[in-house]
Image (cartoon, rainbow, N blue to C red; front, top):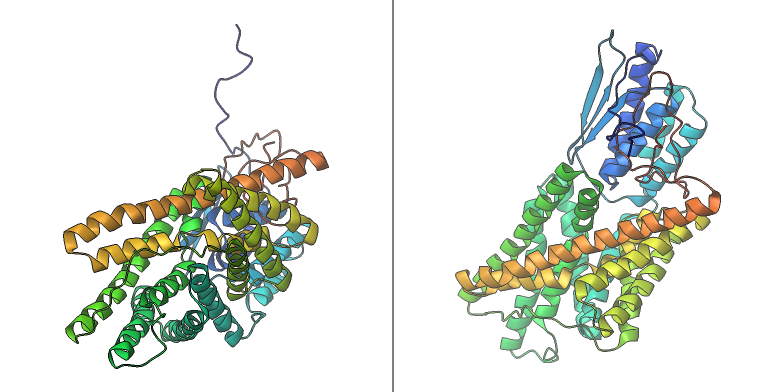
Length: 481
């Protein structure tokens, strides 16, 4: 046996400059940084941000570029050759929101700039115009979408019409209060405390009304009010985003997202505990059960899953077509989940399988309909997020004696995080398999993940990065030369 070449991959070595003037290189790096920071601020994954920056710099003939993305900053370093000083720029991400309309517009603009590069000044103006564009929905529409999401969650776990209406009002108030606290600059941790206290206060008022002899509240469950409110607060957390970053190799960002989920979940637990303690001292104890069960009607489950997906897509400023497609994907994913659980597949494995189906289908349909697959998949998996498991773990911690509560609730919370990771893995695999299918149909090669080292031979320039088949900036941006 004779080796045909070195047994290891090439180590990237840059021995010749790109020939780009320093002033031009500064403008290109600034342009790429603006796009990268804007994408990270609007909900893109670390892999997408890295691919965006590499695509833009490659389009303007900057080859030796390294990108480092973490949860709070983006760093771009440009190696200008052995005889020139390197250029490194870092920018802080000061806020993060889920805004898929702006995300779609940014991606479309970047694809256009990569295909038809223009002057950097003009490109900067176009990117700033997309960033500063108004939202597609008014604030009351987003608030109503969050309230509908909570009401659908309540119906999913067996609430009747009266309970769903009470949950709608409570969730509307939660959304408005959180928006007001955000405008005041209150930290998210304290906002979660206030947000979780609101449904718990509503549950306390139900207990007080019963004690005072108010009729018509016999079938109103305080636990369902609290559970639906908690799921609403959890829907905006990045459990799946943390898993996607971990699976893509961006471990620092994944750990930061996971720790944020832990801290904000702790805020929820504190808010519930404070209200429970106050109610106990006032003589109105609330018996909140940690266990909830889904309604037995599969049709109601599927309809509620579709409504939850559409409501979340609207609350995240997705386009109308993306919201409708997210609803259809959410309903289909729930049916697949129910079928797999009926045949004896475990809940975590069934969630991963349903998410794989959602990711595969959404990638194919998004290409045909010219939509963002991320907006569709994120909304479609919201009904399957482990909100009930997180609710169960939190209530076990806060409602049982200290030692027993932690011993019972911590494994439940760990299992919920594992289910979220399974959803992220399923979506990623589904998107990857759809990419393989599309690449085979179009006769293209599948590109390597974003952020992977691309060996640069001074005698052979790297090829132009390959765009996604959907017109997006996925985690497959550059080919090996």
